[in-house]
Each structure stands twice: as structure tokens, then as C-alpha cells.
Image (cartoon, rainbow, N blue to C red; front, side, top):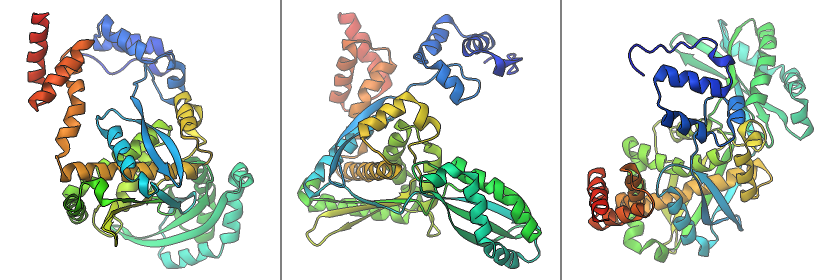
Length: 425
């Protein structure tokens, strides 16, 4: 947008999506080609987009690929992954294949439990407030369960209280956690509604003032765990195994390495979360907070050598995903992807997602410990670069192959190759 363009569009939120697009085109001085691209990108789903978000004008498609070779708790699954990054899906396929002979991925979960926090302020006796609240646990359970009778019908509902007194810059605060079994829902709406319903009663019982009333995305009572064993011969020998362990120890000790190490794990996690219509931001926030639970930011995964010299990987993390509510229930692509997965419960989905995260980490560490991350990544990235410089049809593969042969995947080289191919043609 130019400097003299206003961001104010009168009545914008009341317009139909096509009218909004035209209004934006006028304000931003978009050409017909850009407008057509935005209109086409909605792919006939602009009405759904308009119900999911405010001021919708189009949709933005993310490629969905399938990770193969994945075995979770003895069941083979095809895993849809939504990502724009090259090599992510290929890494999962390869990593999963390498541990199939040892049974693939073995998982466990702690159950679909979420927590909401109610912040209590203004009490000179915060510890006394804590005990006053604990004395009312029966009434608290009744209030929470009455808020969501449907959840209660399916076996969920209030489970327990966790009350903390925390020191802050403005003095101590009492924080009430209501712990709720949310069954096959992610649970944000359920626990938030319960917190809102409970807060006035807490004020009445304690004399404190309630302020924030919202879930925590550090879902440390809703953990998914996975382990897998990679035979040393599938890794590439003892030296590669030991180098991978050194790479893990580096990430576990250094937050600069851990940030990229864990980003690689989340490449896999977030791709499945997104493909199933779940909340990527909530999962990512909880995962990174959990990685710092020991007082410093460290590797989400744990790696070790077993008695036979094989490499053992372990991942334990919060994973609050659901099958009902939000985009998961109403987005047709998410619903189709869930059918591909063949899951019937949120627990099953969490087990698959955490397995993909461990597979992703194995693939990244093995690449770093052997050829380096760029060889495999850039080979797959070569086609993207060919597209970036305007290659079409058969030109894309030709440009990509020449870039890979050069061992340098750069835009300037791709431009030169494409220009030469066209001159020769």
C-alpha cells in the first residue's frame, strides 16, 4: 500500500467477501491478475472462510502431503501433513521406515485433561484464600459440571483443584486451577466457560477480586509420550549413532541449538495439527513452555543408547488436540484428513502426532550428523527455486536437476539456467 492509502474502509466487516476483495483492491491498487489470484485461491470455500475468520477476502492453501511407513502401537497409519517446507514429509517417511523392524512407535498418554486459571487479587491473606477455596471443592465441582452438561454426559467434567500462591512484582497472588476432563474436545471453550461461571463465587467466598479467567496452554496434565528404537545398522553405524547423541546433548545443554532442534520437532507436530484443523499456536506455546519446565530451555526429546547399541528416542510433551469443535469439526479438508488417519478419539490423534514429532527429530539429527541438513533439504528445495524464477512445465525439472548437479541451489543460478534453456529452445 502506498503512503497515501488509508486503512479505513467504511462498513468493511458488513460487506460480502467479494465486495471486501474489491474494496481492498481499490485501496491497495491491485491489478486484475492479483485480484483474480486472490479470488481463485478461495477454491469455492469463501463462505466457510467468512464464518471462520473476520473480514475474509480469500483463503490461502497449504500443501498437504502424506507421510508413509508410520506404525503407531502396532497399527500402520497414513499421516496427512500440512506444510509449505520441503523435506519435512520425506524425513518422516524415511525415519519411520528405519524403525519399522523394531515395532515402530510405542505411545502412552495421561488423558484428555485441561486446566483453566482464575487469578485472585487484593487479598492480604493469599494462603488463607487458598484454603477457603479448597474447602468449597464440592460446590466448585457442581458449578463447573452444570456449565457443560454435554461434556458430563460423555464422561468428562470437573476433576480436581490445583491452587497456587505465586510471588509477583506487585505482591502475592492466589491462582485457582480448575482441572477438567474434556474427552474428545481440545477443551478451550469448556474450561473457559467454567472459569467464567466460577469466578463470581470465588469472589464471594474469599473477598478477593477475580481478574483473568482463561485456560492455560501449558497443558502439562495432558501429555502424549512416544518411544522408538532405531537399529544401529539402520542409522548408518556406530559413529553416526554416537554423533547423533552428541547432537542431542548439544541441544539439551544450549538454548541456541535447542531452539532450532525443537523447531524441527514442531515441523512434524504442527503439520499434522494443522492438517486436522487443530490449534497450532496452542500446541506450539505449550510445547516450548514445557521444554523450559526445568528452569532452562532444553531439547524436547531425549536420546540414549540401549544395551544392544541401538538408538532410543523418547518424546513427552503437552498435546491438547480434539476431534470436535472449531475448524476440526467444520472444515471439510480437516474432516477428510481425519478419515485418512482413521482415528476415533482425540487420544489416538495425539499418539500419532507425537510419533511424527519424534520421527522428524530423528531425521533432522541424522541428516546433521551425516551429510548436513542442506544436501537433502536443498535438493527438494530446487524445484521451489525453479518456480520462483518463473519456470513452467518441463522447465521446472530441468532447472532443478541442473541446480542439484551444481550443488548450489540459488536463485541467480536458476535465472541463468532458465534463460539459457529458453534461448536454446
